[in-house]
Length: 369
Ligand code: AOF
Ligand code: ZN
Image (cartoon, rainbow, N blue to C red; front, side, top):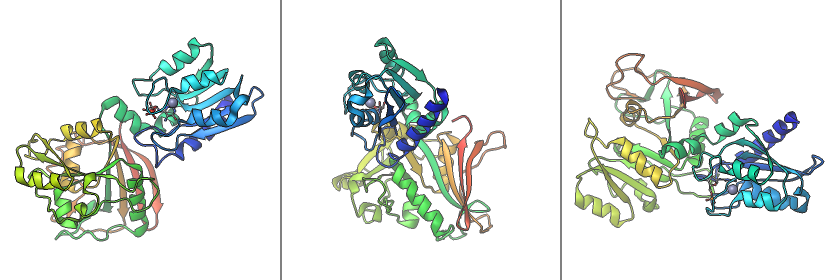
């Protein structure tokens, strides 16, 4: 029977990933119901944060045919009253005889209690079917749940010699259009995007979602601006300034802070790090506790270095162009002092490498994450 569960779990995983753009900070979940003869009678996925959970969608489709049947679900069914009632109640009410679970829910409100409650009610529970894939699907959610900090991805568009701008600062364009589009697709998936004030001053970016994949056109935009230099005229503030959070070093210019707050920007003071910039751990703590489960860091090089030296990065997403710029004065993808030896550096594992137009796209995870 296990091969059947594995195949169905594969389909449930595919279903789950359809929620990729809409569910955050909730997890992606897919579910399939088969009747007692093994015939599929319902399927569903978690489509939008706050919407019905995958199991409830699949069970509703199955109706009375779920009695005595099996529910195959990528994530342990929930037991808590959140935005929706517990899925475990729906499973029991439907008379499901067996639940096949991919991975446990890292949410401490659920973790293990879902499967225990089902077993206590006499439902057979099979756990860990394609468990690694199911966990991987929601690795950002898992990291956020376990650490309270957003899952951090450094996104960089670099030359083959690791530069993000030429001598003099010009960076348009290093990578091809295909890479830039793929970079925009990341904005549809992440809860927030972060840049340093240097990038705002140099490029005056809007940092918006452009592709329309996420039901919300707004991504939370975060600026590290230790001295509160952000100009009120910057493009970032021209639309929806209420989605902008500026972190500055305490005590920063109070009147500038008030000006920003008056137009709806959230201004948060944090302590200084050794370089008199914003200390990052409190920044991430603040974001994590305000529902930001994933953060795309888009530079510049000094910001990347700050994150790396504090070991606050989980993933690097690089678009590498077949271009060499050379020169000590060209901006490196990672600035700062740099590590003193290869052993001290941040060791990564290449997870995906593919050609993208003229460029190469590399997704590398920090070893052990
Ligand atoms: C499930 N099936 O499809 C999802 C689950 O705020 P709520 O009510 O939507 O609950 C969100 C929590 O429920 C989330 O943190 C995670 O633990 C779980 N998500 N559980 O049984 C689903 N999306
Ligand atoms: Zn649920």
